[in-house]
Each structure stands twice: as C-alpha cells, then as structure tokens.
Image 1 (cartoon, rainbow, N blue to C red):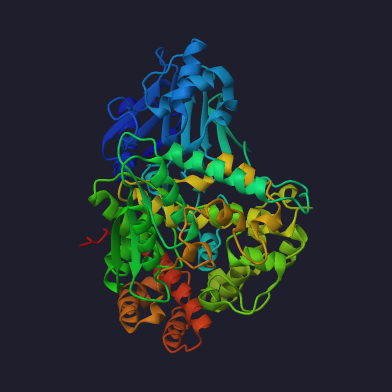
Image 2 (image 1 turned 60 degrees about the vertical axis):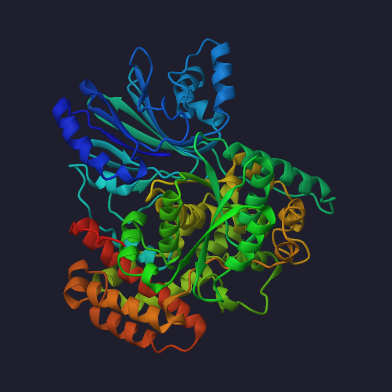
Amino acid sequence: MCGITGFWNPSRTNERDLRFALDPMLDVLDHRGPDERGSRFFRELGVALGHTRLSIIGLDCGHQPIETDDGDYAVTVNGELYGYKKIRTELACQRYTCNGKSDSAVTLPLYLKHGLAFVEKLRGEFAVVLFDQREQRLILIRDRFGVKPLYYHVGDSGLVWGSEVKSILKHPDVTPRLCPKAAVHQMMQVMVPGSTSFEGVEALKPGHMLIANLRGDRLEVETKRWWDFEFPDSHEEGVDPTEYVQGVQERLIDAVATRLEADVPVGCYLSGGIDSCSILGLATNLQQSPIKAFTIAFDSDEYDESNIARRMAESTGAEQELLRLTEKELYGPAFERATWHAERTFYNTLAVAKWHMSRRVRACNYKAVITGEGSDELFGGYPFFQRDWLGRDSEGGIFAGAILAEEDQTHNAWQDLCGFTPSWIQPWMMVLERVKPLFSSSVQDLLADYDPVAEVAGAIDPNMVRGRHRLDISQYTWSKTMLEGQILTWGGDRMDMANSMEARPAFLDHHVAEYATTIPPDVRIRDGVEKWVLREAMVNVLPRELYERKKFAFMAPPAHTDPVKKAAVQEMINHWLTPERVAAVGLFDYGRLSQFLTDSWNETDGTLARRNDIVMNHALQLHMLHGQYVEGLPLPAVD
C-alpha cells in the first residue's frame, strides 16, 4: 500500500524542473508511504513518476518505480495484488522476467505479454500508473470497485495524477479552487461519480483506465471502462438456495485466506455486524496464531455495538483492542485533520473515529487489517435495498433522516433511468431541499440551470440498469455512487492511509462480487431477512445472537444527542463560520446560515435533528477545506 503521483508535461524537459515539481507532490503523500521514496524521470518526454512506499509484501525488494532492464517501461503501483507468486511463476515459464519479488513486480511483464488486457489478470485492490516509452503512452488504472484512489488533472500543459488530490494541488500548474457544483453535491452527500471537491481535478472511476498518448507536442487523453459490477438480465426463480450458500462460503474463505498473506502481521477490524464478524471467524480458522481484532466503542448505547464485538472476539479467542471515543476525540483538531485527509466533507464523525482507529492500529505495530466493507452492496444489506424491492416498512429508527427518507421522493431523471427513484438517494434529496435556501446568491443562480440530482443519475450507464430486477438496480446505483464516493474514501482508504495503515476488504474480491450478482434476489433477502445467503454461509462461525440480529447502523453519535457534543461543534462553528470567512468562501448567505444553526440546536424532532447535523458538518468542512487547501492554513496538532 503506497502513494503514487507524477505528471507528463511534454514541454517540461529539464531534469531539475522535473524534480522541483515532483518533490512537493511526494512530500504531501508521506503518510501513505513512510518507509521509502522513489522516482523515475523520462526527461526528454517530460515524464515524472513518483512513489512513497508502505512495505507490506517484499519488505526488502519492493522499491518503486519498477523498470524493465532496458529502461523503456516503468510502473508505480498502490495497493495489493494477490496471487502474484503463481503469476510470477507462470511468467517465468514463458520467459518473462519480473524485476523483484514484490507483488507489484508482475505488472510490467504482464503488460508486455497481454498489452492493456493485462489488467484483467490482476486480483486485489490497486491503482497502477504505467509508462510505455516505446509507444509514448501513459496508462492510469483503477481497481474494480475503487478501493484504491487515483485522481488526475488534464490541462494545457499536460497530465498530473496522484493517489490523493492534495498531491495534484502541489503541482505548479494546478491552482487549488473549490468547485461550487461539487460543494452543492457535498451538502447533499452525493458526489457525481468521477468528480472531486476541486475545480479541474477528476477521479478516475472504478474499473476504468485513462490512456494518454503523445501526438506531436500534445497529449491525447481518453478513458474507458474495463470492468463493471454487472447484474444479469434476469434471475431464475424458485431455486434451491443451498448451492448459493455453499458458493458464497467457498469464495469468501478464499478471499480472506488470500488477504491474510503478507510479510507483516494482519489484523481485523471488528464491529458488532455480521460482515466483520464473519471475516474474523474465517480468519481465526485460517490462521495458526490468534488474530488481533480492533473495535471502536462510542459513548452512546444507541450507536455502540462493542458489546457484541467483544462476544465475537471472546468466542474466537481473538486479542481485542478496544478504542473508546467521546466528543473530545470526535471533534476539534481530529475533525479538522480527518477533513484534510478526506479532501471532501462527510456527514458523520464516523470518519474521525476511523482516523483514530487506524492510528491505534499503527500504535499496536500493525500495518494491515481485513475489513467487512462491501458485504451490504453484494448481498442486499442496507434497509433502502429492501424498501426498493419489498416496499416501505413501518419504522426508520436511527436510520431516518440519514439513511431512509420519512416521505417518498421521486425525480424524473431517476424515474426515466430506473423506473423508480432509488430509496438510497431520497434522504439526500430532502437534505438538498433543506439546504438550498442557505446558499449564496451566486450558488442560487448556479442552481437555476443545474440539477444535482439529475446530474448523478446522468453518470449511471443506463445499459446496466434497464430491464434489471429492482433489487439489482438499487444495489448497482448505490455501488456506483456511494460505495466509492464515501465508504471507500472518507470511510475507508483515506482514514486508514492517513496513518500508514492498509485495509483489505475481502467482500470486494471480484470473484466474490461476480458470483454475488448471480444470486437470485430472494436468496439475498429471504423472508424479510437481509443478507440471508451470507448469514447461512456463516451460520457456524457466528454467535447465534449475531446470526439473528437485524442490520445495525454503524455510525458515530450525531452532535444533537449530547450537550457536550453540541458544545464541541459550536466551538468549531465559532471559529470556521464567521461572517468574514463565510463571505470569503462565497457559498452561503451568512444571515440565513446563522439562523439555521441557531434553530438547529432547538430542534426536538429526531429525524430533523439528524438532518440538521448533516448540514452542519458539511458546511463546516467546506470552509475547512477552503482554509486548508486554498488559503494554506496549517493543520492543528492532535494529542
């Protein structure tokens, strides 16, 4: 797991200029790779490849960038490639040599053998940047679900890329500016796939590659999809679920076993949910020594599930590390630092909690953990999936306001695309309507001709949803937007790698995912039980209490639930949302925003209070991002 960055500017051919531009881009990625740093320049072409390394596999032989012996090809890789030993051996039998024994070393010989199709041979979580000097071609590749990030900027002077946006913003040809459209999307929590918080900086979409070719003295850039989370046109009805239960079990065992391979110890994240408990149960049986399990505990019974996690750890003999978090840890300097790492806003302080947890993992001398992300996406775990297929249930509980809308919402763009408006986007449509009156006149003018909800729908490939089952449509649209846009960014890679810690989501192994799309809906959700097929596959490794438990919202307690948390948020508001700063950023009308904040603290309806908390968090963080990236304010120290 590492950080990669670089640029291709055909007119910048002085090696000193190349180094001068690249070094600051690497400096800001030190947290992703504190163990080693490397670079490779193709001076005559103006190409600079940079890499910061977190050594997990091939501790003494994993230097990057990796080159061929003739120097015509070079590659940088962020992530983990599984099954690389078998691939390396097969390549050797066909007279292809790997320079080094790290997992990343298989990429260049695979490319030499298969061309661009080599990416289909890769298994794991990865972002790859490969330069082919002979063809004068640069290739950026992102893994199937977007577990590993990769961003880019295309301008008149060329192409700039990086594992994080902050490295791109350090390039001398890129000016940091918040994008007003992206700010609107962040306020409603749903980013347009491929977008970022900053003007001119895009995210390479999951399962996509970018190809840049030199034509004369200019670059021609194109992107294309190489994989997708594709559901079949139809499912067989009335099938015996036994084979699917067995199929999930076999593939998940293999995915966890694969992710336990490393040259350093591998632990597990453990909440009280079925997903992480299943991972721990399998890992315990696969590994000879006890597994280290890391658990977050919150100071609110309504949001805390550490008791169940503790029982799971005890039943497996795992050594559990429990991290208890209060308002002191969730707000203030840690909140600001998490925002800087996320490079976008987040609706819940779970991101801050994840930042603290990755720091604890590293303090325990662990660099890697296996996690449970992706299970809900594959097996229909979220309540909005069930609502889209089986209809509205009678209660929303703590889901209401943040995960479920209390009133049905529809939008023409989504109706045209899907035949219905997915339940997952409906609460965010309500947040958008709540926040529209707070925007400044310039943003109001923008919204007169810009429909954020339609823009998100427009980013979905209609060929992947039309004619599909309603559950498939719901799972697909969520996975193409919120899985990558929040769960795998501010809820995943960005908070983990902030402290040089690698997360390995076993459910998002593509062998598991591709099989999951074939499972009939009534096997994924059966008799109203979400993730039924996974529960049955894991029935003998889960405590009975957990096997029978309904989906729980893994969220940090919102500010309105505790007067001490309210005070902590108000302190941040007093600092970041002053009249002068709000005017300078230009996204909100200060008077209306100020009145909203005052009214929010007096809200007694739990659903509306949760929605107000979301708006507060996003508004605060947009001003933090402006301060951190546009103004260049220093980050506060965290105790």
